[in-house]
Length: 116
Image (cartoon, rainbow, N blue to C red; front, side, top):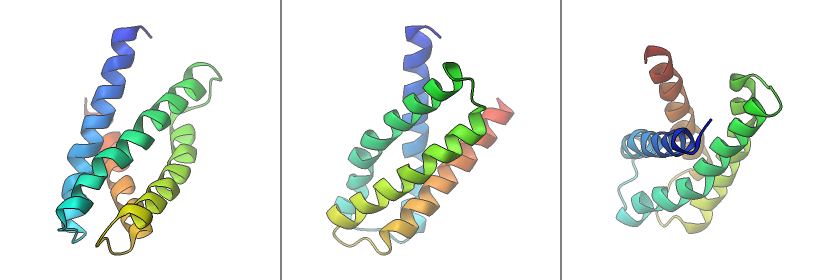
C-alpha cells in the first residue's frame, strides 16, 4: 500500500465517519453546538489510530479485517464515551451515544465497502 493509498484510506474513513456520526448525534437528541463540535476532535483522536492499527494488524500480522476492526472498536467506543462524558456539556448518556454512533458508522462503512 503506497502513500497515496494510505492517505485515501485515512481521509475516506475519517470523512465518512463524520458524515455518519453527525446525523446519528442529531437523531440521538444532541442539539448543543459545542457537543456537536466535540465530535470532530474526538474522532480526530480515535479514527486515525483505529485505522492505522487495523491496517497494521491486517497487513503485517495477517489478521482478518473484520475481527481486527471489531476488537479495535471496543476501546474506541470506551475512549470516545469517556471523552464525551468529560468534555460534553449537555450530552445525555455519552457511552450509549458512543456505542450507537460507532456501531452505526461501522455498520454503514461495511455496507458501503460491500457495495463499492
